[in-house]
Length: 244
Image 1 (cartoon, rainbow, N blue to C red):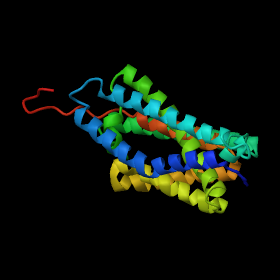
Image 2 (tube, one colour):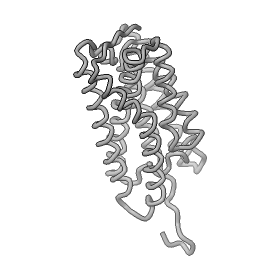
Image 3 (cartoon, rainbow, N blue to C red):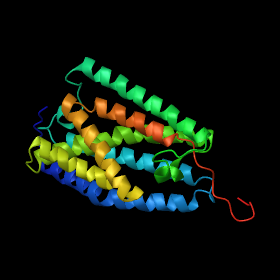
């Protein structure tokens, strides 16, 4: 895979502002929002709805800003942001199918563990986000799809193009920087979250570099996010004496 983004001055300024937000603002806001959700989840019935709604709006606003960076830079093509068909469509389709099977099988296993009252790996870190009603579940799926689409455009498409086109980094160095920035976004889950995001970001970045397109990373990200955000929620905390 090769890209040669030529960002304009306006595109560089807008891309730099987005990159700074992803590195500094997003981890802080994500941690603050999740902490607030965890505190109010049981006491305020619409806390999760508000959380997902705000997250979806923010992600699409950021994605629109990334598209603006592209539109402000006539010397940059959509392919420089990963918005292109994969180099090998058959190979990509096979990998989508493989990851789909993994997501489905692991999701069924996690649900079986929940029915048996057993520990589900990783659930505690996102417990406050897990839906308890059909309406919350639909919104969780919408949030998962939004996360997969917008995060890949920003962390893979924009950041790597910005690293190459504005900072003059080699492709793989820019990719490594994008993984590091994505890892920090997991801070709302603590140190373990940063490590998990680093591993997941490395996988998604590798898929992007291997195919030359965001199609496969988006598909994998969406499938894993949908699986994780539709896990059975733990029972809400109850006050002493049995009162909810």
